[in-house]
Image (cartoon, rainbow, N blue to C red):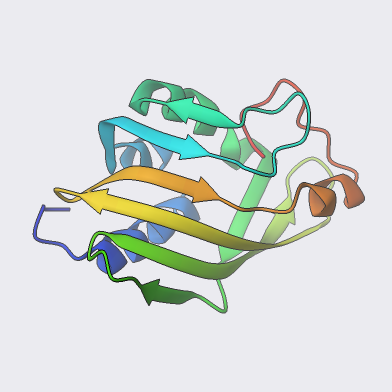
Length: 142
């Protein structure tokens, strides 16, 4: 993606990369010093990842845990700051270990500068993951 790509288009492209399980290309969409935060992370899970390398390490094994099929109900809200979006969506697919369904609702506040993600606050629901019987302790996936 190029710096002239709109933040909304960059975000849509990032979702396509996640569906394609192309984690290295997804990580390449990040600024070197980008920050990913999980305000509702349960104890023992990271609440803040600083830098592209930390984000890459966190996401590396994501496809080994969750096989994403779609992001239905995607709503991208622009804000008064042209580089910041508020995103509402669902991620659906299956859990790799069990074959059971994965269905998670997300709200994210995403900031883009010079065509790269600089900040991503992911307000996912850890209770939904616990309810499905998942235990990602020690893994990079949420």
